[in-house]
Length: 363
Ligand code: HEC
Ligand code: HEC
Ligand code: HEC
Ligand code: HEC
Ligand code: HEC
Ligand code: HEC
Ligand code: HEC
Image (cartoon, rainbow, N blue to C red):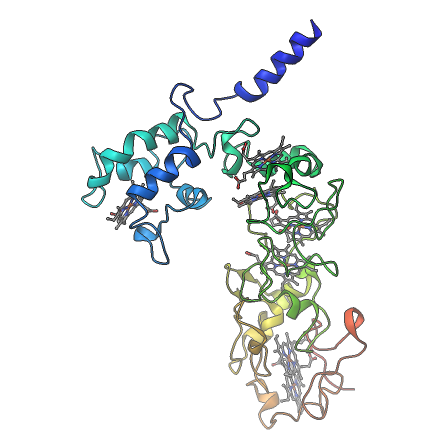
């Protein structure tokens, strides 16, 4: 009796919720059928650096489209992908390929639920971020413990006994035993802050890396280190609210110094504007002499020069007869006689009267 129950459960686990790959009599998956179909009919236009319609058909993720505006939705016969190549409504460009591609693509999207592959181990939704079986949900269900994945994909998650690596899309560094550290998915042994970012980038030109180190290490030596919390919430634990409970990208939520003097900062994915530190807020924002108050996150430290966030000097009556570098007469705690910024201490414990939330005048 006991063994029958176990057997039933085992069978249900892989066939109950929905078929692994569509109609079992006519299974359709990306790897087996759709990738070759699209290679033959679509990639001539939908590949390379400037694909037709800004749409590439060369990888599963790109065919699904952006997370917020998917081109293909599992089970949805009105998905843009299907409308575009439906012989009944295709435009002149797609008419020639529609007969060859439509019915199988329809079977894939609707019956096949956008199955990625036919696997005895995983459900077809393993790589579809909208699918309950998306693989990060499996790790979540295990309490963010990777040991089960490591069992097959290797302790280093680079392939293991099944020779399928995670590291083409990630740079995961999870200790054997499966319990991640704060640097298992991003950051370095020194800090959870990028580099590396979530896809392994280490260059500041990548959005996930950007100006992190400039703020944390203070490459330009114009202020104390900027705390992570100034720009986004820091999770106490891997499963803290706000962390890992939404799709990428990370959420930028300004606080403390960034909101100084009534500033209302914003982040548009590329540029920060109205941040107190960069000349936002009632007083500094009214300075007509400031040259660069909306720095681009990936454009480097050359954007933080004297005169960028506020004029050097500001363009008001107090400074009418002042010229740079003669600031220290009135701002001795902030500026050296040579026009550099006064920094006390070193490393993470250094402090400065500059960009500390108050205007420092006098001794
Ligand atoms: C001869 C070139 C060509 C071929 C072949 C082609 N397309 Fe297109 N496709 C285009 C162009 C051009 C556009 C943008 C304008 C339009 O919709 O006609 C486009 C747009 C699309 C879009 C809309 C993308 C978006 O996000 O707005 C989808 C989806 C699409 N194609 C799917 C396919 C599929 C699937 C195939 C193969 C079965 C295919 N196309 C074959 C040229 C092509
Ligand atoms: C019993 C062995 C086994 C376990 C356990 C396992 N996998 Fe897999 N995984 C595979 C195999 C094998 C493949 C390749 C497809 C196939 O042949 O079934 C694969 C493929 C994948 C893929 C698709 C990768 C690609 O590029 O094709 C992802 C993602 C994945 N696994 C994630 C995970 C995660 C996350 C875990 C842990 C929760 C996990 N797997 C646990 C065996 C396993
Ligand atoms: C084909 C690319 C691909 C492969 C292969 C892949 N992943 Fe992922 N994985 C992604 C993407 C994309 C996301 C993020 C989706 C989102 O948040 O929008 C993700 C998210 C995750 C997350 C959630 C945290 C994060 O970094 O976003 C974990 C954990 C994870 N993957 C583990 C694994 C493991 C373990 C394997 C190998 C067994 C694996 N992945 C293989 C593409 C992949
Ligand atoms: C000056 C503001 C600022 C500070 C300080 C800062 N971050 Fe970030 N962080 C950002 C921005 C901007 C992004 C990119 C968000 C996006 O992609 O929309 C980001 C993204 C991230 C990401 C996601 C990377 C990826 O690949 O998408 C992680 C992880 C991260 N930060 C961790 C940290 C940690 C840990 C600290 C402190 C040690 C820190 N950050 C300090 C602004 C900051
Ligand atoms: C399993 C992979 C993983 C681990 C382990 C991990 N992070 Fe993250 N972290 C992410 C992902 C994915 C994001 C971006 C999207 C999000 O917030 O979920 C992120 C974003 C962040 C951010 C940017 C703010 C935010 O929440 O979006 C900070 C700060 C951060 N992580 C700190 C930490 C700290 C501290 C730890 C250890 C307690 C940690 N991370 C462990 C995957 C991970
Ligand atoms: C003659 C004295 C004097 C000199 C020299 C001087 N400042 Fe000031 N500065 C002030 C005073 C007084 C304030 C406070 C004004 C207020 O609170 O309205 C101030 C305020 C500021 C502020 C805050 C924003 C603002 O417009 O009030 C900045 C930024 C600033 N100074 C930069 C400089 C720089 C850069 C130099 C050197 C090029 C400099 N100052 C030289 C007297 C001086
Ligand atoms: C990243 C933006 C930024 C850059 C670059 C910058 N400042 Fe400032 N500066 C500020 C802000 C914000 C304040 C407002 C007062 C505060 O919070 O300390 C300020 C205030 C000042 C003051 C007024 C005294 C004080 O401490 O309040 C002086 C003087 C000053 N800056 C000089 C300079 C000089 C000299 C340089 C070039 C070495 C420079 N600043 C570059 C943001 C900047």
